[in-house]
Amino acid sequence: MKPITLRFINVHIFAYTGKMTMQIRVDPDICEGHGLCAIDAPGIFALGDDGIATAIDTPVSSEVEILVRAAAKGCPAAAIILSE
Image (cartoon, rainbow, N blue to C red; front, side):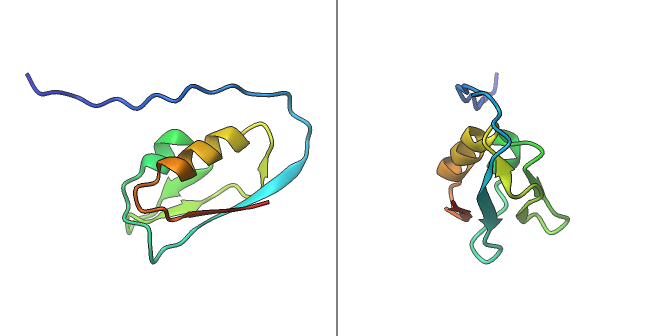
């Protein structure tokens, strides 16, 4: 039997304030196309046809900020750039 790896993130979603504060960008020269960001924050990141991730929903609201931070922290290539 092959071992499998599962990714789990403990997430606490806080009350939505409507405040859009965080800008996100994926550096295409650094991204290696692992796709973990799209798993950690679906709907915020997506992989293009070239396998490189892009941020498809920016700026992000405070309700999903924790998912975006987890995706940035978990990026093996450190290609996700966050700015407040």
